[in-house]
Image (cartoon, rainbow, N blue to C red; front, side):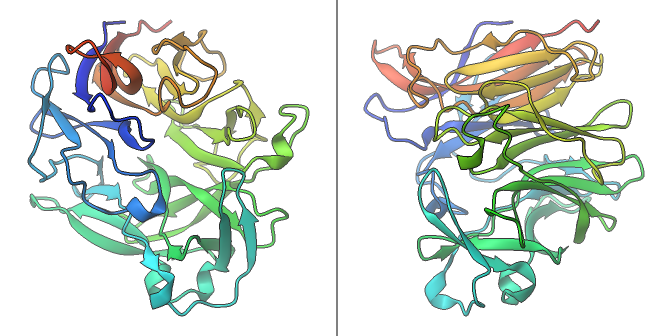
Amino acid sequence: MGEPVLVAEGPAEETRWGRYQFPNIERYDDGRIAVTFSVLADAAESYGKEPEVPNRSISLDGGKTWKLDTVAKRGRSGIKLPNGDLLKIFTPQAFPLSQLKLPRPAGEHARVSGGKYTLYKLSELPAALRPVWLSRMARGSSEWVQEQAVLNDPLALRYSLRELFPIVWWGDMEVAPDGSLIAGIYPGYLEGQKGFYWNTFFYVSRDNGKSWNVQGRILYEPDAAADPHSATRDGFSEPAFTLLRDGSAICIMRTSDHNGVGPMYMSRSKDLGKSWTRPAAFTKTGVLPRLLQLKNGALALSSGRPGVDLRVSFDGTGRTWSEPQTLVPVTSQELHTDSCGYTGLLPLDDQSFLIAYSHFKHKGTDGKLHKAILVRRVEVKAS
């Protein structure tokens, strides 16, 4: 494991939640590596809005050095589809409720983390609130175009909160061996579910992302034996989903940490997400798990809170894991003291990758503590 490399640094007086955290790392097709991060409040009011200060750094040497980028234009990256297009999930600005005519609510979910979610049947919503929002760069083009795809799910619910109606469809997409796209997303609200927990829903597209149909679901069911606070969690969120080399799929999910730290759960599928094993808790804590299978077969898992943890399944199956390597010094069990816990993974070659993460107590050249985004190079030798 290499030493931490500074990607970006917030002002010394910047301590607000949501700023200079939540990193994401990707490679553009011209070889550049980009790390983006949040500089806005962590709230629905921020969705889809352009930041007023730069929120991206670029590396031209494989992650050894970084320079803050002030050019807003995004490079070519994302999921490459069988037709050559590039595709990404996009989150638009939330719709003001004052401008909408909504149907009768189907229920409510009072989140542990605060706020009341009012739920509506997807099939009864106005046309503008039913699609999946995506960004597409067509083959041969250099421009990203926002588009709306059809979402066919007769049991799905969507929500409003704080006089806003956000369109949230977050998660991972994978290209299956047959060329179809599989997406594992949250928050999956299900009509008729007792308690209206968050679930993980899986969808399939056979037309390069133009329309999506239900593929399968992982439903949250409180398990007091695994987690004493299971009944008061929000449910499953922030799923990490990937297809393994043997054709099976693995999904790792967060549970909320607002009523004490919540465990991460794991589930498996042998039929491209149509059916899943009963989720089992396998860590004590963890938010936003990230999965990366290297070409040498090793499977990396990153997660966080109270610090940042990195685990490896050396045989690539996810059935056994190394002990967690802690990347951020943990100075307090208060969950938001040392890091946001969110990470990003990017392969460099067959056996190495970069991990991007935040450190809230990084010592700057001025001798003061700053919120900072860092990367480290990790090399893994598979068994």
